[in-house]
Length: 388
Length: 139
Image (tube, rainbow over all chains, first blue to last red; front, side, top):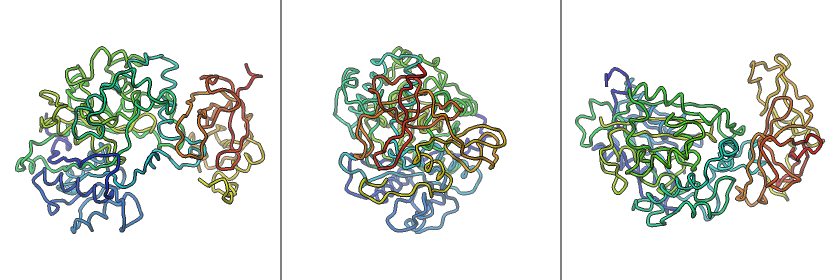
């Protein structure tokens, strides 16, 4: 690594997640703050060290203007030098924070978020019911938007349903072994179980789709120089990039426009990292549904369009496979905490690179790939992390 | 979304999209057409996405098209929707597309590339909506 690129002058020094559950008896603000304080504690820092924040403000109190990162200055009792209110979570939030630290706009930035006390009974999460004018009137939940993309893929390539279902079974079985997962101890699942689960929006059945749960995740970014004095082995941001095809859930996603979404960002990220997708030891892919997992391997160029399900069946996605994938159980089984979900992917990658990922630890993981969003949302982002 | 018993909003008063909904209320399908580059687009935007001209008007559509993609929804986002229903992205022949439903046939009959034509229905919120149905004449 040359160290010349600004992103290579920063490091992730803290990462934490709270407990995860279908419902937590607290608020989004409190669970988010707890994740933030835990990430600072993990980093050997305190709120007094923070001068940058990327986080949504869920209220109560404060502003109703979202996302509202600056509201956290009130809670932390300190002025900030930098806030991120564009996309304050996951890969884009982490890359923005890293760029701000590298540019000297701030020295130590917190990226955090989550939800609690919002998921009620069987109702689907608010963020899965876009209220946009030409979407809401048709009852188009977000899973259905992704389904419109997957249906064209099925029509053109007819992937083996058992192979696709086996992806969900593998991720869910990994989650079953993760004591922190919402679905800990559930299963084991077979492809047949996935194919026997209730249909939600064709071709997605219940077990093809991610959870909607409660909890929070947080990470801390600072300069590589400062990282040397902190307790945790630093995690380096080797490369990253994003693609924003269009605003999500305003117009339906078109397979021909979005199946390859992320390929350009991935190309730029790997070029910056001086690595190729074959060098990735552990994949933290945004597994909103099984077809998105297939899509991302095709988008990365690890196999040809239409061959993803076949390829993954042959390569293996368990911790002993060629492409260890979401060994924490991912969004399907560990947790999907709304706007905290994208950040939770980074927390898991950091654990893998530190060697502290528990039952799902991939031996000697040195390079981790984290992704966010997907084809149905019409934006995608990628970050490559390594041992600092 | 408004309930079935609530006072229905007058959608024709909406900024940008009022004329579209007023046409739907009359049983007509219209779409924005750019007066400079001649292209149709959807959803309505203040400027044409092909040439950024703000000089565009709503013009009548033939209401004929083909299914680009479709999914049968079995678990609706709210109880207001009665599942199953077929959500679809329909390519309309003037070169624009919209999210809609395919109605007047069994969900299993819907296929990619199937010819369809517009059919106005009463939506779950009580408003008229432009759905599509199999276009037997085009088969």
